Image (cartoon, rainbow over the protein chains, first blue to last red):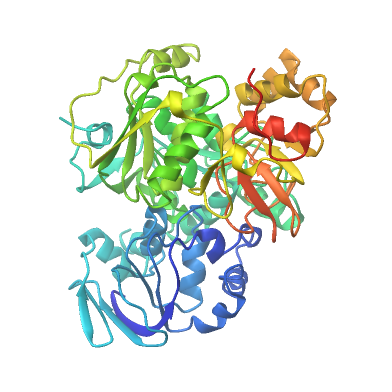
Length: 157
Length: 403
């Protein structure tokens, strides 16, 4: 899915993957563990507000460890997309690979306001204003449309 | 005229390329997820198992039966699929790949953010996610956006107290935690000549803490000699004039011992500003500073004395440990009261083997000091080995002594 909408949840800059999902919860294949503990070290109350949310964060979202569980946890918790002026590059790959749309934009955040995005045409809008977004490569659009890299390759074989 | 990344990837900065991967590795953490993705993709045959590695290092030996079960499954897969496999106790994935495996000019990916360490050999080495890795197992290739490059010009030489780690923390402080996002760092200039491979590995290791895709050195006579000693005949790489998106000048003579203050790697202060801060633990090890030269330096500083705080030393690999045994370094460490861990990542990622408690403070030679990383409620200060040794002797943050 590369178009969508959700309610804004505002976060700061340099949110690292240890904050998204702590290292102590990684040794499992149970995705429920990750959604239960997502953002626990940042704000334990956040986990309950992520269903149908669009996270609007500051720069360098997802920095630190390469753990893909961070992107999976957000996706499984119901996050529709993450909007940030920049993403750490491995998180960016992971997000696309698990089918979580990532929108590169410095968007002013108003808590709970509706955020809409369209990564095919390259825009995001909030508070009645539309902002341009650098379009994704066609390969990345295909991966997102397939719902992630696993389904993309499954479909290509 | 190209940067080293452009030369290796064969395209200009900003372009997307599909590239065959020369070597690809996972560890016990990311390997479990890669295997899950691989199964769902319907993976049956690997693209080229001889260049694919599974290297156990993150929670080794296993800390509980859940971890052990996950590791068992991955171990079975690695064995039955003929991937190059390294079991517990052999050491950290990046270290093993640096012990005569990765060669100049290669495209190397690891399912770990510190894979950038291997750029020290003039390879294009970078981290990817677990599902990326599963796709590489399937196809042998992946996509990259060719990075723009920041030229880090080094001049002068480090004096007796400052180490490559101080230089690394200094550049992270100058660039900031996102100062090089999507970009590569190239370390160039006459200051690179005197840096040994261990020091180059430290500088490249920290690149990701600025958001960089990789940190790189051009292979030179130092690289050629290091690899020749490990059975590889390689050629040096000649830099050519190229366009850097930004340049940073660092005179090594100006580098002084520094500490990264939690919870950010880019909050850099002189050691003397924090002198006297009481410590609960000192940790020496990791893919940053767990090499033989690090252990030897630490041992020289504490030999014949006793550490005043619990001190954990985790060798980066089995060969590091073996050399420390052979030369007597290990005995010096044990006699000084240090605790020795099994080669691997140790407590760096907060999973086992020396995590810290609520309110505790650890001085670590690792590369990350994020909130709660090494244990909930604990604080991590990052430093060089020399600073860690001086601090271990006094139980508080202490400036290293001039040798």
